Image (cartoon, rainbow, N blue to C red; front, side, top):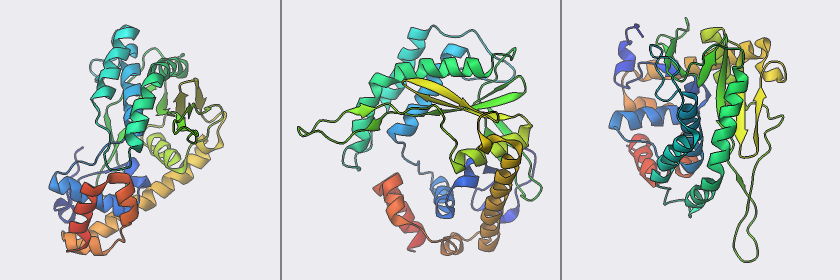
Length: 297
């Protein structure tokens, strides 16, 4: 990244945008900037932590743990050890305590499914790159979009052999409670899954940045499914071009908000309408307090 950060962005710490940033609500964009400004960490949840741990375990087995381009793919860790280390990471997570126990319930239930999810992730990645000599793991990359005055940051999960692949873990889903108050869980089917609009936009950014055709590897505890341009219209080049145009429009809106605010948090807050109910649902009371600081000066 070599671009000089424009002056109007410096107070907000907005030295770059991102592929994921193109898909978020503008109040979320402003709130995350403010949290970063205050050095307040957004809380994690069990579902995204599940995805992190599945990828972590798979990477250890594939020899992509802490991947760096200069090092390349290494010899993989033995499966049992890799899964044990991934489980240790999952067990260290502390569930949310402000959502009536839902996050804690998921954290306790997901443990029995993680091993299968990790092993299916490994199978899926290997199938994705069966014609590649080497798989590249996740590392920070940059893309320059002429209409945006800062670079775009992106992290591809896997690439190699002229293609790229993003891993999407699909944890179990709740069944309705039984009469005795207990609950069972069902493993989602992944066959035939299509990308969400957000996933399509992210893949479009990766495609524009690298020229590599994207694929999405959906993994559950019962198997995996690879969506790509051969079986998914949303990942065909024409559809990706349209999705990339949406990403550019979103980045431009964010850029225009920052320009209009010109270094003033008060002005920036006044330009977007927050959704406090959604802030509470996604992030909990500590971030609601931060949002109150920002929008209720």
